[in-house]
Length: 297
Image (tube, rainbow, N blue to C red; front, side, top):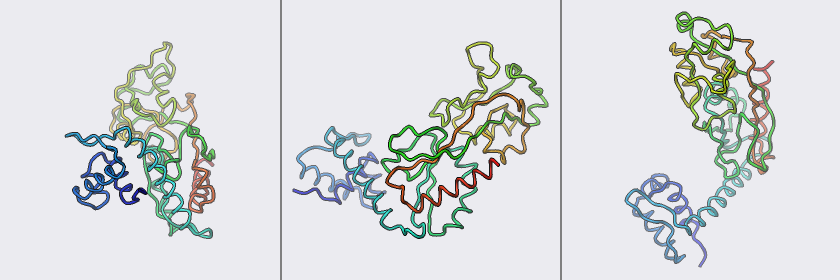
């Protein structure tokens, strides 16, 4: 008996959501309708696909196997649909862009209006996550990453090199004093990135700068968001090292130790091989390269 595509679509939604209720909300179906579809699919396959628990649903081994295949199939179908409906002459359709929360919220989001004004038939979904979304599984179409791509089979282009600025508020420095050497940071409150999926290697280099021991300075605050670190600095909490693509947001702060050597951040534009001929991808790539060149000129 051939598999029913509608039932597979419902199954995939339930597998991803972990409950009939949440899947029903996504599919605009009632909980009972979703449950009936899953029951019918299990009967047609003669295997259980979910363990039912009071706290939700867990895929069985057979369910895991089916969901891996279904996820791949739907990802490929979505990519194919996007490519078939796009005009070769003019960029059109939805473009899902993923990047880090810091770069996406402070640099990219304010520039999207310019991109969309030049490409009115493109709609953008911006997915901000400091973890790498899976482009091969169509979690996004393209990515701007602050490190070389780790996934195989992705097309990559180096688009920028960023540095860091150590900044503090005038009120904080008035009370704590201006550090003149890296060693002086021992006497200051530091705001660093928490260790939850850091978007950049060596992101907390400031905690080690000028240290004569192997142990880093203890931070006053750890937070897993560069925009939140910026706000903490503005409030007078302490000093932080923030990437220079945030330059516009750093204008009201005082830069300290400008000559201190800092690691570089290499930014890459990446996308799957299947999107090589996508007009949406090419116009966004060209826009990104131009805007970043203006930033660094």
